[in-house]
Structure formats: structure tokens, C-alpha cells
Length: 113
Length: 108
Image (cartoon, rainbow over all chains, first blue to last red):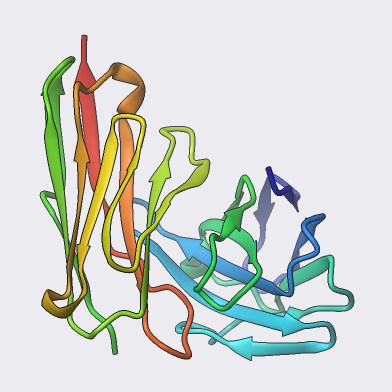
């Protein structure tokens, strides 16, 4: 099965600090995604990318930046972390934009204090 | 934008019982996926099912595209089926939109 890894797996950050979440895929997929999941809710799309050096806004991009330096790597950056950004963050990859199976990483639990 | 409603929100089953999970969405979806989230958080794709019926093991997914609905049937439930099931339709040109999920708890 396709492999998507995330680091760190959990993180505690302080309000106003910078946080970088990393994602690496070995599937040779063009598309990569960042989602957040709040307790008891579904996933919401933050940013996605379909090619290296290019990112697109998803449904809730405010407060987040993304970076795709290579096909394999996709980062999510919180320049000024806020309490409301406490959530679980999932990275995923796929061949097509929603049209093919998305493979998810294990998630990163972020707690902002 | 696309709105996704899943029902029921939660479901409690005795092992061996069948269950039907429903997904309704507001806009025609060109594609649709069902996902399962383990209690520990891991997400796996169950079905890519834009229309028609698909089976895998004890799971059956049926999508009626022009009625904007999809269902997931679990037959002979097992404790290992416990977790949360998400429906995620795809609207052309956009990524998946996830529903709020159905949490299934199967007791022995």
C-alpha cells in the first residue's frame, strides 16, 4: 500500500509561535493535501498541491501556509499559532484531485497552549 | 458549496447485526469515497464509488448519483468494525468534502 508519513506525530506549541508540520510520500503521487480534524468532526481541507513549487488554498486556509518543495514533500506552516488551531492534522496523497483513492498519513496531534 | 449529511450520527450494534449508514449531499458529485477511521485515528479508504454498487468483504456501498445519496451497508458486524465512517463526495474541480461521520460501536 501507498506510504504517507508525517512528522512530528504530536506537538505542543505556544500561542504566537511558529509550527511546521511535515509530510512525505513515496507513492509518486502528484496531489498532496493537508486536512484538519477537530474532535468529533470530519476533515476539512486546508491546502493542497498538484505539482512541486505550487500550492492551492482549500476550504479553510486562513492562518496556514503550505510549501511543496518536491513531489514527495509537503509542509504545513503555522506562522503564528493560535489556540483555535489545536486539532489533528492529516496529510494525504493521490494521483488525481479527488478522483482517485486518497492515502492518508497517521496524523499529527497539535496542541497550542 | 457542497454540503454533506451523514446519518445516523452514531450507531450501537451487537456483534452479528447488520447496519446501514446513509450519506446525502447537496450537489451532484462526480466521484465519491467512503473512509473508515480507526478508533486510534488512522484513516483508510474503503470505497471509491461514484455510482452503482461495490462490495468488499462484508461491506457494500451503493451510490445513486442523480439522487445525490450513497449508503454503506455492514453485514454481520464484528467488534473490529467499530470506528467512524466518513462519506466524501467530490465535486468537479475540487477536492473531497467530508461529512461529519457515523460512529459505529459494536459490542460482543
